[in-house]
Image (cartoon, rainbow, N blue to C red):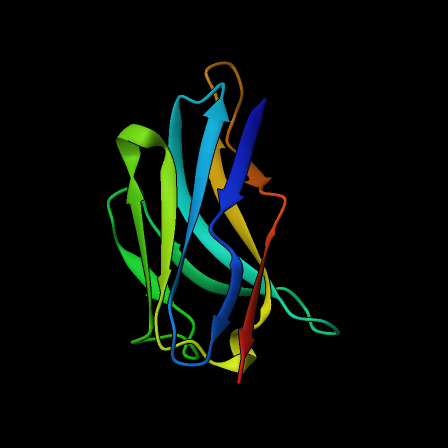
Length: 120
């Protein structure tokens, strides 16, 4: 089994910054893509940013130029640096990872979510 544990959420003012972290642990042979999603109240969950095992990244248009996704493969950890925050960034942020286990095929795992609230 694989667990994803997020940290770093909280309250920020508009224009401020926050950094989210997500550490994966458990029976991990290799982590393929890692990603951050978010879900605001009354809205569907949406992809924020994704990073491949080789470091290629892709972002939602709404966060391009403000957010940066990165990963530390040695630590099985993915980060989301969020700058120039806006009130519309307020949401629960979820970490996602495609993990290949030692005795299992690739599977999708989710973190428990961390709240990010941006005040105007």
